[in-house]
Figure 1 (cartoon, rainbow, N blue to C red):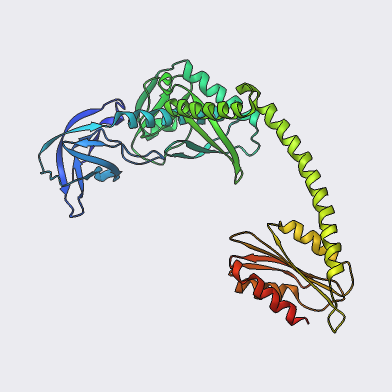
Figure 2 (spheres, rainbow, N blue to C red):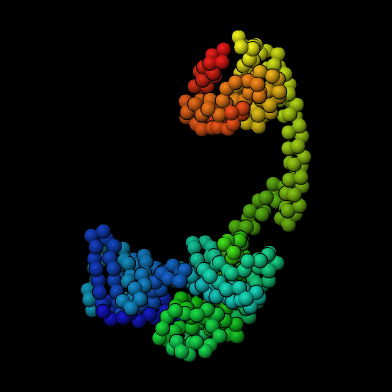
Length: 403
C-alpha cells in the first residue's frame, strides 16, 4: 500500500487540502476507515490527540497512525468512498490551534526545565482542559518551578522563529538534541531559534508568540519526579477567567477586594480553630454530664454487672466515645451506645476491664443485622449501618443477652 504524505509535517497551519482515496473499508456500524495518498490530519501520537474535521460530507472523528502503512481516517456516517476518488479534507482549526499551542508550549517548558536545572521531561499528556509533563526533578520547589515558567514565557514573548529541519540519523547524532530519537533514517527536528532542538512528529507553531502564555496550574511529586500541570494559549485564558470568577465570588462572600481574600480566609481559619477547641471542651463537659446521669439510672444485673444502653439523636461518633469512656471508668460496666439520624446508625460498645464480653464480635454481629460494618477491640468497638428501624430491636437483644 502507498505511504501517506503527511502535509502537517511541513506546515501545521494547513486547514484544507485535496487528496486521493487509496483504501476504504465500510462497516455496518456506520464507522468507516479511509486512507488517502496525502493528509493534513494529525493522527493520535506522542501524547497529543488526533485532529478532527471532514472528508467531503463525512465527519472525521479520529485519525490513527499506522506508521509505514499510513494514516487511517475514521469517519462517521453512511458515506462511501471509492478508490481513486478525489476528496476535500477540512481540519477543525480551533482544535488544531489548541493542540498546536499546547504541544509547542510543552517543548518550550520542557527545555526551560533543562536550561534551569538539567531536568529532562519523561512524559507528556495532553488532556481535554490541561496538560501534564513528568520532569526528572526530585527536589522541586515552588520557587524553582516559578523560575522555569518565567523563562518559558520569556521565550514565548520574544516571538522566536520555529523551524522544521529534516536530517538523517547520522547528522542528528552530531546535533545538540534535547532528547534522542529511536527512529532511524530521516528525522524531523523542531528548532526553536537559539533555544531548543528536538525530534518530533507533532504540530507546532511558526513562532513562539503563537503560544501566547504558559500558566502553571499545580505540581506534585510523583515517583521521584515532579508532575507539572499546565495550560497554554487559549486554555490559559480560560483557566484565568474561571479562577478569577472564583476569586471574585469568594471575595464577595467576605465583602473584601479580590486580593484580600487570602487574609480573610486565614482569619476565618484561625477563628474556626478557636471555635473547634471550645466545641471540644463543651463536648467533653456534656459527655461527663450525660455519663453521670446514665450512671445514676443504671441497674446491676444478677451478676453484678451494670449494662447501660442509650440512643441519642445525631450524636457524633467522637461524642459517643467520650461518654463511653467516662462510663467504663466505673467497675463492672458495659455500655451499648447508639446515635441515629434519618438514614444512618452509629454505634459504640464498650466495657470496663473487669466486665465480660467481646465488644468487637458483638459489634460485627449487630452491624451485619444493620447492613453496615464495624469492629475494634474486645473492650471497645465502633460501627454503624443503615437499617435504622432495626436499632431498638438489636439493643434490646443485647441487654437481654447480658441480663
